[in-house]
Length: 163
Image 1 (cartoon, helix red, strand yellow):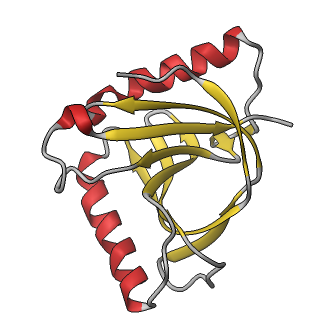
Image 2 (cartoon, helix red, strand yellow; image 1 turned 60 degrees about the horizontal axis):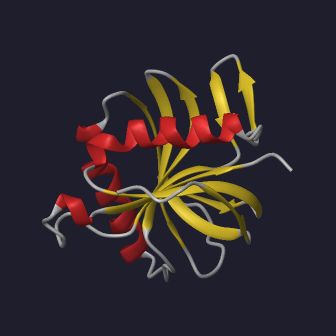
């Protein structure tokens, strides 16, 4: 199931993440990156405020720069592998998908196609190394280790729209 795409307003939100440069497919890289993130959060006793997300910083298919992150209650200083940032305030295009992660590339295509139809422009730039996004997120509302039924996995896709 897929919700209809919509435009929402978001406040700025601090986060911490582990940044990686990867190639598609990157399934084997997710576990180690998330393990490093959760270990860093636990070691520093950081208070998180929401679900895990992937922030696609640079896309130059099949190469990607991704931040595997968590929103936090207050800004945190970067340390070692742990990066700190702020998801920018502004308007976002979003849709929520219920189902297996294997379908997320198609869900992204649907959100992007919808945005083109209504003449939205992403808050992004094209550089020599790829498309740089202000905020392009996949937010994972539940954990497959805790929810065994893929039909109940909930993922929200959000892309910041240019003001």
